[in-house]
Image (tube, rainbow, N blue to C red; front, side, top):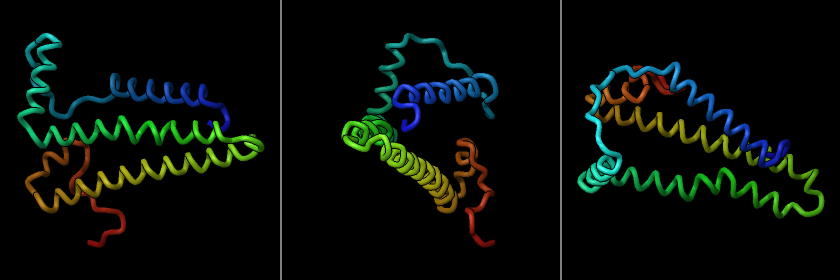
Length: 153
């Protein structure tokens, strides 16, 4: 944002999004292919999905929590703070903005690293508490035999 502005940031985001979509489409293959579901109308599928959320409280809590994060926290972190800093730059913003945006970038990167570490730690905690969850841990792409960094055997 500091170097190329909001437009350049959006283009960089679009490029990285295209790379991820390309990887998903061309490289990634499922480990355990599932049989194809019967074709159904979109509206009927949505009704079934909401029915599942009604009947399964665990899934419902997860979906509501992630929806709240995606609607409130993520936009504020990704765009809100940067736009506020840019809008209130005032005199000397040319000098201060690159430094402020670098600090903001470090903050967002730390947020992402913390989220990844928390997800890994949670998966390992579930594995220790529920050893029968080994196939589920593998299904999300983690190797259950890995130890946490710095742990002693």
